[in-house]
Length: 106
Image (cartoon, rainbow, N blue to C red; front, side, top):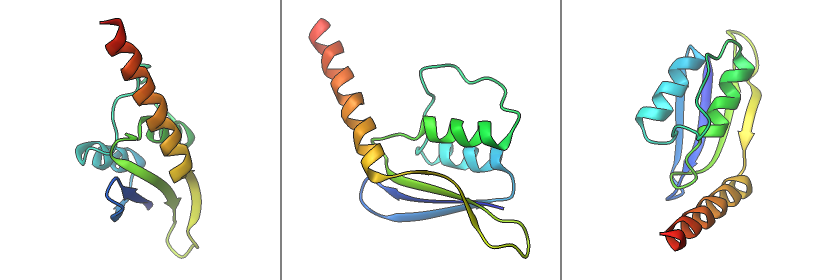
């Protein structure tokens, strides 16, 4: 079981649970929390690669923070990955600066 706890841009807490990490990624994408990174995605083979792809694609305009937990039946949840509100704010600032530069070029 994979559990993603995130806070959206309005501060609402959302929890998404899926049995398969690929499904978790898919649910995040269909809800608009994830967007295609600039670098094209390759075929992810391992859990670690999927987790990194999820973190890399978190949309800083829609997500304030995210923590992903893993849990097997009968086991305590363990934190697999996390992006804090500070990291997401930094990404948002970078994205806005890039947009500003592109607008000034045109």
